[in-house]
Length: 309
Image (cartoon, rainbow, N blue to C red; front, side, top):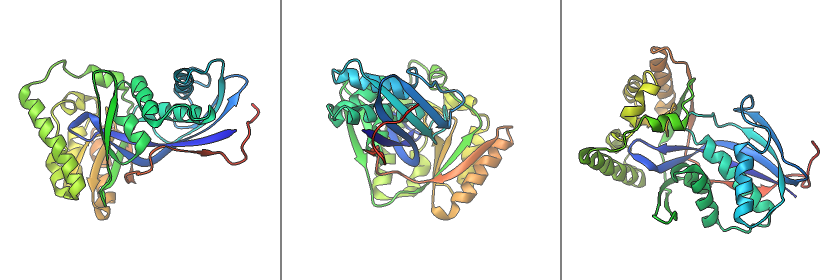
């Protein structure tokens, strides 16, 4: 048996929703997997020059964790990974890898774990729920963990979404480094500031009132501290607004910027952000994306069986 798993990129936080809001995007990693006599990992695309090609690979380690959670021992997997999600750019590459490994292993082992347990395991491995939940179920998600580690989420799928413009700098920002920039405590004023805007963001998306995104994407909990990691960030956000974007923010821990706009001005917004970063000596590329409503897709791979290698 051979399976194919595709997992979407995700943009977390969306400005004020630190560690709880995320959006799945129509940019996908693909994994083909089979049971094997020994661990095998092949990697093509993003990260092919740096990602491990053995059981140290994040996809493989997640598959092992899924097998262990299901009580299965002495099993090995073979993976072929085709990556489109850039590494360390705030687009959920680590969550996509973990979700892919878990989903593939669960299917190959006969689906012993329900979705709720698959999500819980991926969140345990990630350390926070935002990217992982959005990668599993698609759309825009609100997710939280309780004191026992349980994961609760809601998916937002309104009739329409704005266009999503991603500006991806040639800067890698490891999540650990970005988290190290954050303060241990924040003021009540800043907490209230973000609570109101996170709620406004969800309501604006549900109601299709995208003009509210100018305020709803503002943040005081993480972006001010991470801004130095992306030279030109503030200018790029301002340039996106001037080019017609309703709102813009840091995608996850960065370095990618995400802007929301109408389809008519998407190209202008992307080029404006690229030019603003270039003025600060930062090269970048941009693409127009959209919200992915499918989440993780698992299916039998054409041809079935296993492969040699």
